[in-house]
Image (cartoon, rainbow over the protein chains, first blue to last red):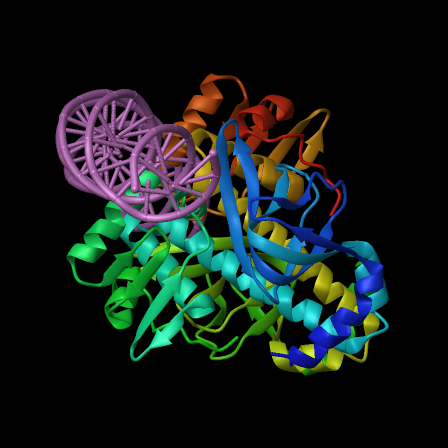
Length: 222
Length: 222
DNA sequence: CGGCGTCATTGATCTGCGTCAACGGCACCG
DNA sequence: CGGTGCCGTTGACGCAGATCAATGACGCCG
């Protein structure tokens, strides 16, 4: 939609506006802020979580290096951005960054682009958890991760997932047991291989997309 | 976050960029566009739907007069924006509107603001359909609608819903039967009254927010 | 105002996933 | 290199909500 490479350099110039935070794996990048916050994730990986009710935690989105992340102030639910691995982030008050960005078209373009990308992903997640079976959800998750952090390997793809089964479950509205069973089924059907806790090799992307209920194979552009 | 009244006037000036569409209830405002589209809904009400798999339709969002709506091009799923009642809309190709808006800060501000509002709502929906029981989902839906189209009536609130039970069900990831039963239960508990097919009176917003699992009563500010 | 079609409600039964429980294994640390 | 603890896997069972089915009523239009 808009070029982002040059704009990321522009964004780096704004470091003075925000706080640089270096966070260890499992640590909190943003939590309990009373105002909307924008976070530029320079390196690492993170999950945006919301506290739904009592002991239930919903993973709203996963984010990776280069992402510009909007963390809402508490309203109906409270949010936190947590590091999945050691990460570097620049944290901005949303209002300040937006008012400054008004003077810098490239910056504003980058912000709008990231907002629409997040919106599109959030909607896809709504579709997935609103109308799909456990198997479809897991397949959608794998394809989405392949699209974002997959290492191509011929017409296959290798994933090194930074998140635990619990994170996946909390993202898909399922339980860890169901995730485990579905991955087992997919392995039994020859669609994936697993190695260790975090490596998954996707053996047949087309078949996976089919059982995800996708119209077309997810494109790898932006 | 940003003033929107003046910006809506600015937006109206852009009519020449887009197509004005007057659509009857049940008609299609946008469907099968091959490019991302932005729609300014001048009057009426609409649902953004996605086709999940076979016969399953997911309502991604409800929109009302004054909303600026992003309709994505088909990717993993196909989207359509359908009128819930007679509506007037201005339909823009997203790329064109954004490039023009780069020259008009007020316009860009309005676009960013609407994008973040849609993102926040989409995330709330993910939380609701990912981690909540049927009763919580229905309570969340009622509170959300009260916030957007409710008519205050003392400390109560009256809703005239433009969408059918099927639309509500497809929005919450439930079935029409479950919606009906949950509304019946809420009526039995004295939290709501219903009159006709589309009128619901919320008798106790605080109790409803509690059973929605909300931290705080939803504020009515944009 | 009356007839008809669509939509909503209510009931009975079924099932996918959650819950509870026990086991297994990878990884980390001493 | 062996112990320990967390994380993941696997199995048994129960339940919330889906599905199937039938009735009821709202609202539209002649």
